[in-house]
Image (tube, rainbow, N blue to C red):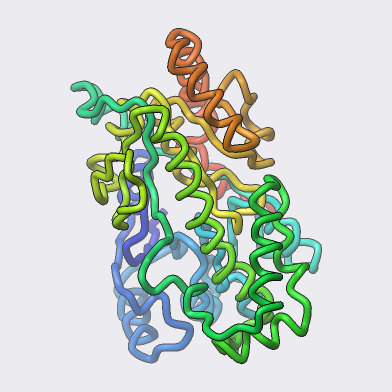
Length: 387
């Protein structure tokens, strides 16, 4: 096959291209920020020029891009979108029902919600790892030697959306604090959207107005719950957990965000996804995963990459883990801050058990969750199975 790829700073594009070549396919990749626009005559012209100059069997992108869907639908060519972000408001564009679409979603809970609405263009597919690349990289040994590490955003940016709320009534501020505190105590179910009553949403609208996209069916309540509050929860939770673990164990943080409030942590700044992360995951005795609460059940990309690098994964609960892995055998899940600390202490003092768990996870990744496996599954659905 010959595959036209569009992307803009997406993790994994090079892994997809390497795997396509390994499987005997051809590809051309166009990087343009215009792919994120909903409507763009400039992008339409770019797409037309690229498409007319090649004999392509399908178009591929990470995440879902309505503008790609519309261009593919016009030409009746399959559009494959492999979603790894959450939230992703583009999934609520009315273009999601375009018959050209094959949208593979890593979060089973979100997939099921869309499927229950009668949308026939969505499928469930957990994320994948290019273990072939990672094995090549790690053949020379790891460059890192961390006790506990975390790689990811702290969501404490200066322009955090939640922090834009100003002059909220006291009862609204108190209510938001209460429901966020409750959510932080519960893993496996994100209930914030359900608890944003019309009067609360009205007050939020007065402070920071938002509106759905013109081609979207998402609600204002959804936008506040998933883009404002979920990220604020991540900022609070990651700060609290990393503060606690760094007070007891040597902890290294890799993030683009400054963290002066974390007095005991080593903040090493950002790292490159391809060139640094595999070494960090393989060289850390414990790799933490602290999921965004907007990922309702899915296995985050970070967690898959940790296991695919042969690293030991200590994660919060996510329901989709149980579809493919056995907690306690392939990874370890924590239920609370104290549980996380107890499990850090245990596995730092039980090296053989920790190494075996990491090895078990790597074996399952290599068997069922490589890009080679996943792309074959995706192509089988696109070309061999009816909807």
